[in-house]
Picture 1 (cartoon, rainbow, N blue to C red):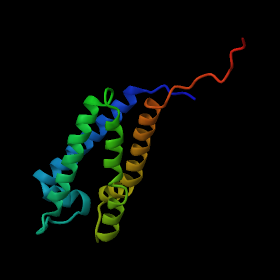
Picture 2: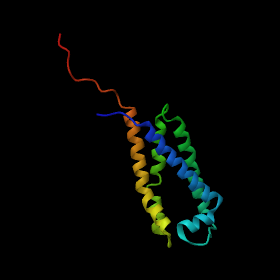
Picture 3: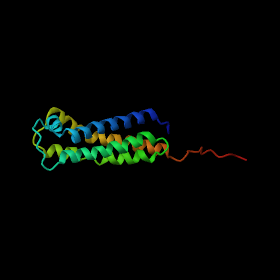
Picture 4: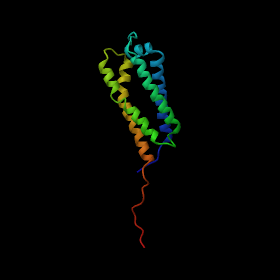
Length: 145
């Protein structure tokens, strides 16, 4: 079994997730009307503040993924934590897509691609954690006396 880990690939994946959630949280928190235009092509009317709440969720993702990016090589359990965070989004975007009435091409793309992407990212991170923490494999050959 090959247990070699490409740490650069994991760094790049975590960096991608950090940047993604920084962008998403910034748009939702700082410019919710832009979110409404990008995703739905409609005028912003969010009397319940759900777009900003979504931004707060992604801000949390950003913070935890940034910490993981910095410390995962010494504390590999952060990979599992980030995988769990990504898995919390496994169904929400499809439910959001199905429940909302209007989408732009960008909204369709983002909301339909994100769930399988999040599952894939989680699988990669969990597999990496398991490889890094697998017990050593010893030869099954017996020494003869």
